[in-house]
Length: 341
Image (cartoon, rainbow, N blue to C red; front, side, top):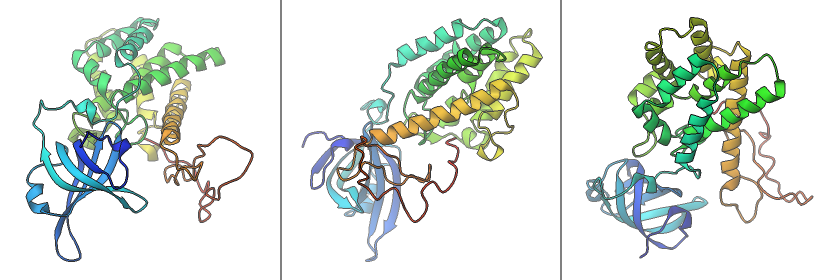
């Protein structure tokens, strides 16, 4: 059997290949027989899987977050597909490249990193430029930033996603300054855009499946970003205190609302702009991802999206209302979108 990617799996196919196990749970069927409830993924998607036969024995061969070789059979299940696994064994480190199993940005990471450097080079304020250079030339920070996702599952949830997100917001910030002309500290706004999510390089683990680190769960990326900035500011004794406060306020407030995780709400023009650009970019990326997913042949609409509390239209306008899916128990547009952060 040839290697099959998840996006290509079809019902009633025999499957053989290497996948990353992102969920492993034990269960007992109604008949009292043990089984395994799995979720596996590769760079093209993820799918549910079950081990029905010899579950206890096969369970010894692998753990959650292992890359495994498996064989199985694809069956229809609750409107989707599921793999019935017949054999599964973990691969040793060095037998695979993790980039084959985690989603990755479609953009060139080397080019994006060069664009980050270019953005910093255009900063005129020498204090902000020194701080940004001290952070983005740090070998550890640079390598983590190059590959980190922007989130575990919401917006830009793929390797290189954080850098892609930061570059997008930085570009939008420059356009905002061009549009409004005066009253905005451009260098401060760009610095905030570059640094607002820098703590995610420590909050998230992305060596295998995307997970939160222990420190990430306990502290969160906002606190971890402030800590990083403070460490670098210790080596810059001439950095103006007021400028440091204004920059850190942008990180502390970029989620906009207390209920969305911000210790402070934005109270400067730069912080307000950053909050809206961050929220905009996250939601646009999420909707683009939904639209790009494989379309149901019978519908121009996505499934109901709980995050947005609505369906998302992804078809081509024809002037005809050919779907009744824009309604669901009166829930359509029933409330504001929650934060994606």
